Amino acid sequence: MTTRPRSATTSAWVVERPAPIASGPLRLVRRTTPEPGLHELLLTVRACGVCRTDLHLAEGDLAPRTPRCTPGHEVVGEVLAAGPDVEGLRIGDRVGAAWLARTCGHCRHCRTARENLCRDSRYTGWDIHGGFAEHMLVDARFAYRLPEGWDDEDAAPLLCAGIIGYRALQRADVPPGGRLGIYGFGASAHLTAQLAIARGAEVHVVTRSSQAQRLALELGAASASAGVPPQPLDSAILFAPAGSLVPAALDALDRGGTLAIAGIHLSAIPPLDYDRHLFQERTVRSVTANTREDGRAYLAEAARLRPAVRVLRYGMQRADQALTDLAGGRINGVAVLIMQ
Image (cartoon, rainbow, N blue to C red):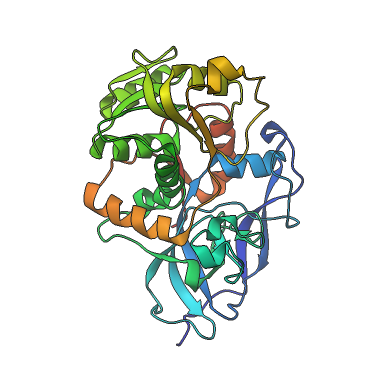
């Protein structure tokens, strides 16, 4: 495979030192353009979604794993070069890079279709440099082919907000025609709600934001408020990173209901009362990353459903502002960095 000409250096945002976003933990730097190794692709980044996990990384809620790491794991890119043993992809192809970047492939979890639980898993924008950059590397075995007809900015959020929402919905175990509560209504929730409604669920959204309430209703939610859902729920998904909402979500569940907690980080959960919150076979489940099969299944379903993606566009030079706006609750939908 031949390569296209490329510059010796590339621009990238790095987390200089984790700290509250208002103190400016990100820096825009120049660094050497990487060379793809075994199984790797070098991508020219075209768009990158901005996820709350990126904010957790910048602020230190996720302990740094790589010094001066570049955030970003909802990446739409164009293949610029490829390393040895890459099959099925060519220069100029458009691909997606997502949160799950690599697994060992041979542990008991990998061998039983549970690679999201691999102890040696690696993650884009946490273990390896991500998409808040002009160029990045991705393992071709973990890259996704993207649905045709999607603009870069609409496709980017599917690669985490969409995929993680898909897995959270699977974990929530919504019965056919059941009532689903969604707590918090940001990037992932607004895509997940559409998927659940398309599958026949009755969706009730709980969020303090009046803008988010309006968006939820526009997208087909049966109710949207800051209070208690109007009817007992069969299932619920907690997207907001607030452990204080866990008892409230469990209170809203009917007997036999399931709560799935979708975030990678959650503040402290208050004490639970067994009789009130857990008895009568209520279930609490966490959501840990995703498998590649989750990603492929969600992208195929999204290609059929064509969910509306509410995008707020930022130039690559304004990545720090995008995270600041996310922290301040000023993004109704999903922020996306546009690189070109």
